[in-house]
Length: 201
Image (cartoon, rainbow, N blue to C red; front, top):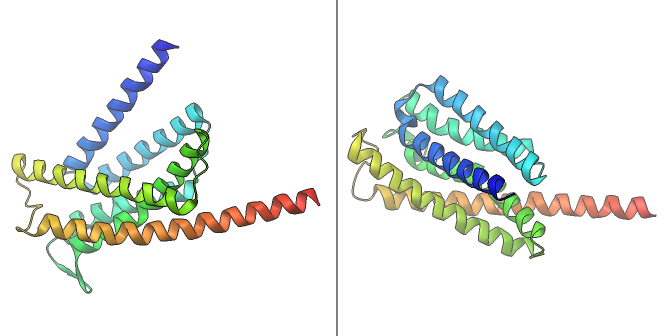
């Protein structure tokens, strides 16, 4: 049992390292590579969570994460960063959209993890915790951008206010994504309760 736990911890750390490395180099890689890596990484994550923790992740939420990765990859492919995209710079649009698409699965995972550990918190409080986690990850991504700028010089930081602006639009996306997740999960809970009542009647 101890050996299994050590292997699992090592695998988790390796996956974390692979994810950070991918975020660091993805703007330098081809669109095809980013697509394949995204599919493989998310598939392995899905299989691990399902096999090890008996949690069936909604494939639709994983698909949103994949779309979020493609928003960034497509921006790099067509050279959209640094250009106007509707009322936003593409960088601002990407940061807001990516967080909006990623937040629902984090809310879902936090809710199920807390329930598994015996903590039945209100959905609004669970969503708040999940939102703070996503914002922390967004801040860490800004550090990854700084590393990329320092060591690979891809011009990912556009000025003195770039990081603050990115975090501002990250926060907007997280708030919208959290509200969306609350609506979806609330609707699902209501539907599940209705089905249980009907089955008992």
